[in-house]
Structure formats: structure tokens, C-alpha cells
Image (cartoon, rainbow, N blue to C red; front, side):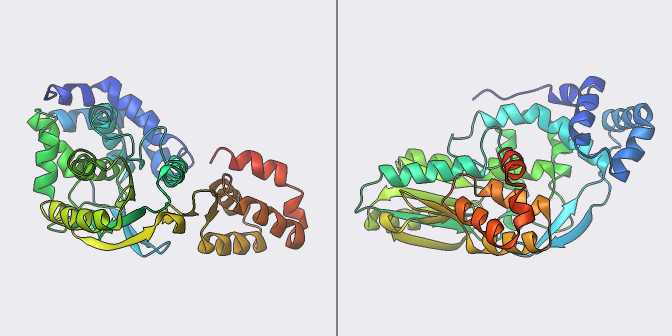
Length: 333
């Protein structure tokens, strides 16, 4: 396997740091942190460049807060200065690691996402024998249980630049002995790297043809109940070597469909979850247009779209009159 070197020089060149700033600023120009960085853009980029190259760079403390949907999660938001550094790293390592991932790993990757994951899952149900089963599994507190020494070993299999890896690993630390912080740009990539061996184990060793994963939720399709149970035990043993354990699993006949990436999916139909419908109705009542558009975008390839539109017609006629605009905006979600 080819290992990549001289990445420090590429990632932290003056040109790449500027491109990283452009990526980090994105839609954040109205944010105070971004505005303050831009006020002295040349100075801040030069200061960043010098700190990285002389070895004095250290990320600033995270701003932490809790979100409660769909379940409570502690989020660690980096300072904008450090977000730029993360983008500089991501621009270099993204292509290196992406080519090692299987096509059916759908989270946080270009041209992937929940819609593509849901499309694949529905196609897998359609192609599975009617008398077959699926097994859906997820990992308990995945981000909080990632073993940083194991993560570093996985990174070192692809990268041989020790100085660069040392900077990378600074973004895997957040004050706890294990785990990585939820909220970092790089944490998404680290999560993909960490479970990539599981994907290859299921595809290459267990020989499961129809399989997909979204972060720590994954499904095996079109196998017998006995094969589901056998795979379950082998997967438990495999992930224990990564310091992980399953949270729960569901074995069900193919005809019963699956609950995955925010959808209730069968071979011939797909619906958004009931909680999403509740949020949509609450947002429509409060005239929260962005939330309405977001849910319509989530529902655009499902049988739920018609019922959402009817709800607007029957209960919120002013929003119903804006459906063409809502549909147009939802199509880009």
C-alpha cells in the first residue's frame, strides 16, 4: 500500500491556507468570528502559517453546547481560526482517504448523503428475495468511544508524515481520555476512517453483497435469518477490536421494510418519520419557512410529500400559495 508523504508542506502552504479560509468562510461572512478574522485577513493567515511551521500551533478551547434532536448530543464548535486549519488538512486528506472507502458508505462525502443512502436502501430491498431478511445495527455512543491510538494507526497506514499527523491528532482531543469531539469538520472524516475496516470486513469477509452504512448505522440486506444471526456475532467480535459495541440491532423480513436515515422505507414506497411530520406542522403553524422548506426537501422523494402539501392547503393557505417557491428551494436541499 502506498503511503503519502510531504503532506505538511502541501497542507500548510500559504496558498492552501488561503483556499482553506475561502472554504471555511462559505456562508459565514455574517458571523462575528468570520468577520473579525477577515478584518485582518493577511495578518491572521500569516500568523497561522508561522505557528504551524514553527511548531507552536495549538487549537483554541472549543465552544460547547447541547442539541436535543433527535437525541441529546454535546457539540464542540472550534474557533474560526482553527476551522481554517481543519479545512487546510481536509483539502489534502479528503481525496487520499475517500478512495479507500466503499461506495456504500454514504455519510459526509461528496455526491453521497441521506437521499443517496435511502435510494440505495430501497433498491436493495427491491432486489432482495421476498423471503429474505435484513439486519440493521448501530454502535453505542460511537464518537465518544473512538480509541485515538487506533485512529492514529489507521491514519498512519495511509500517511507517513509524522509532523502532519501530529497536527491532525490535535483535533481528535477534547478533554476526555477516549473519543473525538462531535462538531469538528475533521471528526466526520475520522469517523469514516475508523469504521472503514468494518465496511471491508462485511463486504470481503462476510461476503454480503447488499450493504450500506451512514455514520454508525448500517444494514445488511437480502440474507437469511440464520445468516443475520451469524453475521451479528462476527460483527460484535470485529468491532470489539476497535473498542466499540453495538447499541441495538433489528432483524426483520424484507417485506417489513426498514427505518433508516430519517425514512421508513419499503420496496415500493417511502415515508418520512412521524417526528419529522410533527416538526413540519409545528413549523408551519409558527410560519418558520426555512424549517418548512427543510422538511419538504427531506420528503421530496417520498409518499409523504403529497400529505405535507395537503396540510398546507387545509391549514395554512398563505404557505400553500408559496408552494412553487417552497418546492424550488426544497429541490436543492
